[in-house]
Image 1 (cartoon, rainbow, N blue to C red):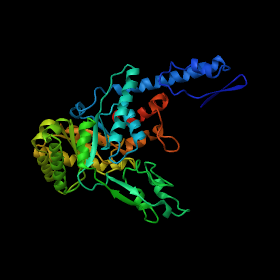
Image 2: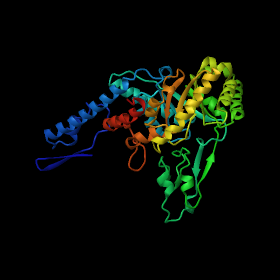
Image 3: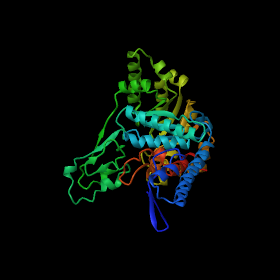
Image 4: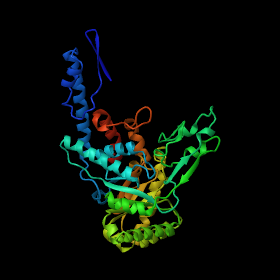
Length: 418
């Protein structure tokens, strides 16, 4: 609500939920408040115009990055947004996709869930509608879904019985949750992305983590039906056997659907393998590449994602170090074995990661260094603009130009750091 005092009376106007500032800047307000003085209407009109100018300015800044997508891997400035492999908060994911598409992100990584994928598509489409309105080029970031080959911390949900909580509990679980997923009714499954921070702080120790693996049959169908561009496979130390089982089963399922692995790969533009540090990292990478086989090397781009310190980028700038060190280690493996693909940072990345990369020229000068993926830090940066005071997602974000401009500005620190 906006209020203006003029000549001893109060005129109140609620911002109309419209994108086009031409609608209602003067006409609608004049109809709603026929008693409103002309100078009040001018103030309102000026405010809307200023919001539009702010949004136009930040969109033009974002457009200076140029084309997005796979080309950024070769330019070594690839940026991926991680919505969360377990995040099923559809309104939030839609707004994240909207903001980061407008900011110029190359790839949006989300849960392998149909509703979530649709939300990403909707966010991208809405972003392009905004770009059309401002006569700027549309963007089509790569749409990626994350899957796991075995038990993995990215694929779990916190759970507890709220009836067991004492009435005087200080609720450290709720305070520690970065997703606002914990309330009086327990855990909101859609919002929880499995970071696990609530588990050790519970004074009664009643919070557990439930792990899950999505059926491969659903994944294959999702890729085909929803036109998914890329998949990311999360694997664990010495987990090549599980990785091989997953890849073989995906191929077997594809063939039972009158398809082949070869054709399935043709539907994808990119395959990413996400892994933490391992004792024999180079040897494990070689085995994983052999599992993928010739088809993967021939038909899709390959990313080696270094998950330095999983789901920690929003905790502080120091979390970046683990991912940078692991990326250097992985890059040595790629070079020594002559493996295809690009090395990309993740796991602990945040706005400080760019500073570290500038200090570690070994990565930036390597031809097979692709870029950076941002998760918790990127979501945290825009969260104040994307959610209400109650923690719910803002509806029709694209209709609030000032809020949208502020969100894009926050996102640009990850995409255009200089």
